[in-house]
Image (cartoon, rainbow, N blue to C red; front, side):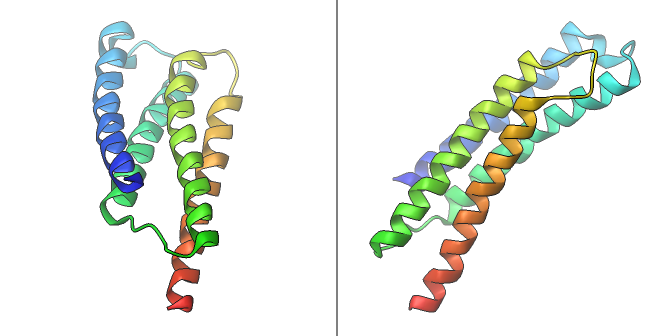
Length: 132
C-alpha cells in the first residue's frame, strides 16, 4: 500500500512540476525579465519539485514492506518524511519565490527532511539484506 502511495504521489508531483513550468511561463514571462539570482532560485525550486517526484516514483516502483517490525516502522517513518517533504517543497515554491534574498528556509528544510527519509529507506535496505 505504501509503495502505491509513493508511486501515485510521485506521478502527481511530476504533473505539478509540469504545471509549475506553465505557472512560471504565464505569470513571469518564462523568467525573461527576472533578476539572475531570482531566476536561478525559481528554476532550482522548480527542479526540486521534479526531483522529489522522481524520488517518490522510484521508491514506489520498488517498495517492499519489511516483515521485521523495527524495519517496517523505519520504512513508515522514512516514507512519512518523504511525503511531508514533497508537500513542503511545493508549498515553498509558491511562498518563497520571488524574494529579495537568497535564504529559502522552507526549501532548505524540505531538502533536509527528504535526505532523512531517503537515508532511512537506504539504511532499511542495507539491514534487510543483512537479516536475510
